[in-house]
Image (tube, rainbow, N blue to C red; front, side, top):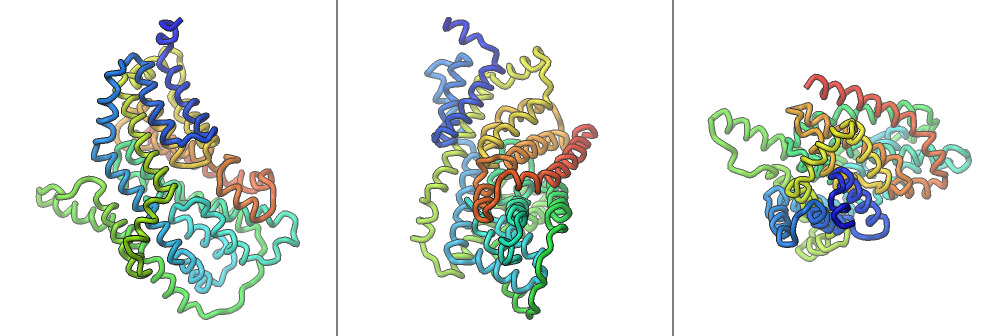
Length: 434
């Protein structure tokens, strides 16, 4: 009996571990802990001895990539928390509201601005700003669902490409590709996302005309308050330009990979602290928050599970099983992230649970084709996340505007379908041509 259990196909073992991790997360176990436990258990099931478990764990935790990823995620969460604490996020939204005289623009841009910084339940923060664009929405039966969907849809435009999102950071780290290249590949999908949102969600809305205001002060205030975000974004091309100059001179860059983003985040945190007169106690309070600790554990859990996948031989054996049973790579690359996105409703969670399984399936692809496979896997997970009934932003938007999930699905389903077709054409084209 035990011998038969150990002789199960590697594909079945990996899929069972995948389902077990998702189930453990739904039952309340921290996802990072579930992944950290699943790695050694998969290793044992694949034939590693108990004495062989320490080395993959040490290898995973000691990698420079792991350390860099932990630091980036910590700084992103600290920056988001400090900007909330000082009221800077609120001032960004308010200053844009003064500057823009279009209610439709305000309804879309305000959740989009909040979406530039990953924050749990950010849709609840932007919902009152969307509501302000149409104060009489309660008098119309279907308007609540439309406003809830506008808030939800534009809140998540950055999930594809914005380099401050943990899902994007995780994807780049697990794919081992350049951040700027991944951003450029995904940016067209974000543009389609915004265009589809305008056509299907904003265009049909009839909102009251705004009062005339002086917009000059609003734009100046907006640019001042959005400074930390500009700092992070500006650091990336600045470092890349210096790297190009050094490369032309035949000299390597004196900093490790990931340093540009780290430098930009440190500078942005310093900006917020100086402007808000925050001290070390505020930084420590932001660092020790539970979501910060959970995210750190998730990073470590992902790296441990991924390392056991490769060190136990599971990756190579899964590829052989797929060929033996005739399972198309595309089916696995699409289905596993989509299922994970549906069940978790969180971008970094579907990346963490599915990417260690699907990335090895297209490892033979080269260059942009490899990156397009990874981007396709991410979009499938993203689609599942947007449709997930446990997505916290979806639930908060629905509750705030007192509407049903069914009505919201009906409003944004055409927009999501358009983005899905665009993703298939854009990424599929790169896969074929690459």
